[in-house]
Image (cartoon, rainbow, N blue to C red; front, side):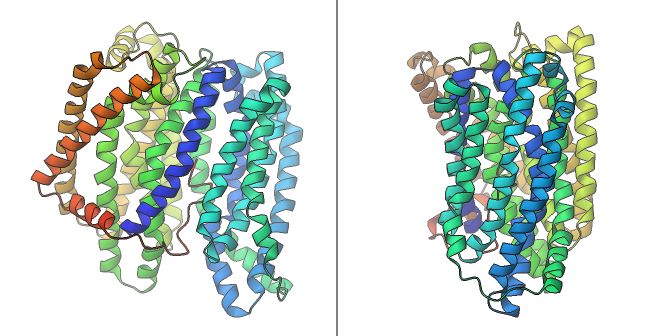
Length: 547
């Protein structure tokens, strides 16, 4: 499992690095202002369609059905997949056309603050309509990728998200100067097309084989939907919370939506590398163990994945909080992205990252329940996330406006005193509280339903928190000492300062863990020391995994 998780983490890291380059260019060209507010708001409807309708044909739901069909008769697999692709295009085109027609009505609902201005509203509607092609293309790519995965074309599949981000970068750099906001949308669509087209030649080169009878096709589609609907409903909780929060951000100071999304994307990097990689790597084995009735081994496997998620998440949380300013300035701090935007984004990142361990463990909880055949409980936990996120954001915003003491306390704690627009931080905190609530409720049932032992987790929590705090303090001291040694007015100087301090802090953390004879550190070193084995074919990252 550890080796599979590290392979997936490497793939995810490659995609996330180019995503950070994308965000750097967007920040430097546009800054945290009106254009990016409109850009990110326009993404909400396509993202909602992708996480609901398009994800019904999820890679995870298709793989077991396709494997079963391949065993029934040669040629059924490819024939079924092509028929499924046709059904997908018809369904998504129908839904997309409805969204296209209703765009003038949807725009004021998702971003009331932006839609209040007629010219901004027109631009938002135009961009939203262009971006409606994105979930169709990404969803089709996701369906085609089922064959790519079954045939072990992992490298081909891993290239797709890189090409997607390349298209977005091309739109910002080359198309926007000539076509304005429509050029940004065209870049996204071009990237989504590349995401799909890189896999199309291999897909159509596959021999067609025997056609699947209509009755078997309908049963197969029904089986796919039975597997995917609960997961789709759970996935939609994130985008629903985000739609509500972005709607609130649209009535705040200009640039609030951009600051929220930049911080959100930054916290998604460690979440993807740690939480997604481990939960996806654990899923196939968990499903097999549960099917075999190996309950004790099932619980031990969960505990192993849980221990390593905590092992990596806790220090990541501490170091992101300590080095947040250096991270934001290195990745985003250029061009039009000014010091005010940097401070707000760094503060929002610190609040988002507080829920890193909670979000990572929640991903494992959901997949453990899916592996056991229980698809309802993750949905209930996700509903708690939506409720707490939205209610917390509304309440915190109101309290932030009314209480001068609370505003001053937040300003001092997060170093945003005298910064206009700091109310957006309440939205980041509300989102984090929703994630923590989902974890807390889910974990209570998780421990009870799978009879998990808490002894090892209590031991690990103490060791990891202690070592991370000591290492974080060491990194903070290194920042203070080395500040005068670097020119912090340049990207290289800020990066060097943060990298040196971070490495020193990580070294201290590792030494403390070593002194405590930490079991997880020894297991991680042993896994890295061995050659990576190729991950099982069911293990794959799809677009719904990687934001």
